[in-house]
Length: 167
Image (cartoon, rainbow, N blue to C red):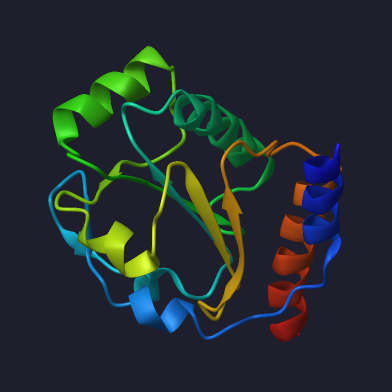
């Protein structure tokens, strides 16, 4: 009960962008074509960075939920970057995506856990919300209900900030 109240309180806190994102914004991870990517490349839209492992059951459920979330938020509005870490390889990632029927999320790999170490990963899963400028807004650890009104409200606000800035 106390944990739930704490979680709700954290989700209701106003956004405060921190410079933490700059520490890992240049750290590479890789797409399915083995091309190096950095978070700096995704600036201009809000981002969910999701670090996951093939041995994490909560990660599998979260991947499915994030795939569903993609229907509500097209890539032009919100980038969802699921990065497989901890002994990541393309074959395992593809098999998991097929097994879970994930069709709307790209595959990214953190082969040597360099990105995970730079972002300060302690346990899986870890989601990091970034605003359109690449500043870290919030970290969400463990199981997250990506369809909850609290989360979708946060995402809607991040997207509105971008549309207001462009006017």
